[in-house]
Structure formats: C-alpha cells, structure tokens
Length: 171
Image 1 (cartoon, rainbow, N blue to C red):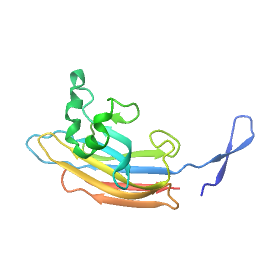
Image 2 (image 1 turned 135 degrees about the vertical axis):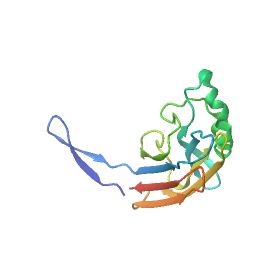
Image 3 (image 1 turned 90 degrees about the horizontal axis):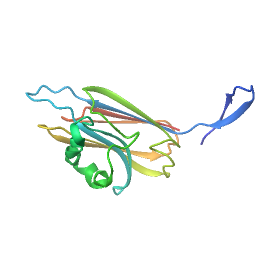
Image 4 (image 1 turned 45 degrees about the horizontal axis):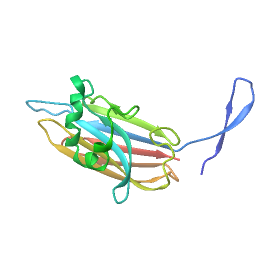
C-alpha cells in the first residue's frame, strides 16, 4: 500500500505525491590474490520465475577497450547472454558501465523510473552473474516479490567471483 506524502513546492502550496517502491542491491567484488587479476564482468537482472521476462538492471564490462572490443567477452556471462545479452545493442544508456574494483557497490532503483519502469507485480528472482578473464564464473539468485508489501532484506554469499550480495526492498 502506498501512502500520500505532503511535499512543498515553490508556490507554498502542498501537493500530494506517492511514494514508490524501492529496490537496493549491494554487490561485493572480492579481492583475489592471483597471479593475473582482471576485474570481473557483472550482469544484474530481474527475471520472472521460469526464467522469462528479463529486466536488466546493470551490466559492468570493459567499456573503454578500443573499437568496442570489450563487448566480445560479454558472452562469458552465459546465463545473462542467453536470456537477453545477445539481443542487446551495447552500450545501453543507464544500464551499462565500467567494471568495478574489489569492494561493495550499491545500486538503487525506484518503481516508475528506469530500468524498473512499470515492472508488473509478481514473483521474480534477482540474478547476479560474474565472469572474469583468467578466472571463473559465478551466478547467485535471490527470490523477491514485486512490489514489496513490507520491507524485505535478503542476501547470498558467493564462493569465488562474487562476495556477498544484499537485496533490500521497501514498499
């Protein structure tokens, strides 16, 4: 349920606005001690149960490689590539970005704004997939219901290419 909130505008009038549901994802990239380290490519998306209806939230890859060569290795994120990646034209405004250094990285999304837009109500899974050159691949899933009826927190722990993934939902 959404409750109206009073907000003040420059005219001094009070106008009701509606609070939108929020989704926050924190992705931890672990610091690995290996001979040849490359930052992982990471894809973050929502999909309906049954692995359909993909909504891309973020794709981190090497965007600065000459002549778009960074896109060459996107297919190493196999699940994301099969679901939606091969159909996309890169880069995607507001979705794609550079690879991230080790550490925790938080992304926040609000209902009604890109990339969530008007995401239909239903059961989904947040999926995070990472692939690293001269490294491995890892995929983590967290179930969620959208829009949330109450605040929800969930997390999953990766084994090698991903650290802790945290999901927070607010109605």
